[in-house]
Image (cartoon, rainbow, N blue to C red; front, top):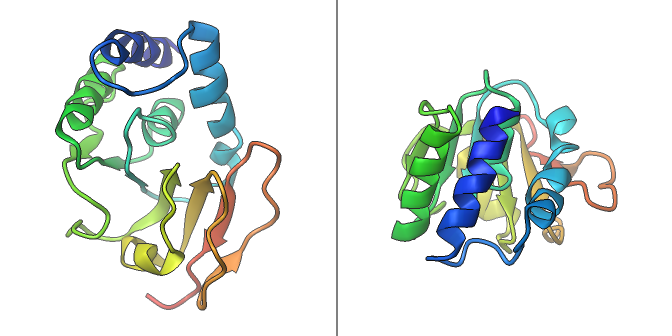
Length: 170
């Protein structure tokens, strides 16, 4: 877990300059940013991952570090957080992770098999263009309101993500 340690160390260093997390100790950073992401590894479908509003790097960069074969794109519109994510991906040994200074509603890339978001209250309908048909959305935080064309997969655990599938239509 060398890459994860490098990410958490860099996060601590940058948090003094920009507000990335309120977790102010190494143990608390693991508890808040890593542990809740672990159940998502088993819930992701095959294929790439697009993380919306990546901010501090959790869950998107954490998942990229735990599953080094998965192609990952991080979307972060705020300049200083975008810069942090670029540095963190390189320092953690995943320079192949694409870090784009973009919002979910202006992203022009191809849809992904998996989309993750944390601490953003976005309607599922606004995420539809980002997800391939049959793809999954994993929401860390309060579940979004039910929406036509989406199906919930299982029940989220106490800390696990809420998982939705985008149906069969592209």
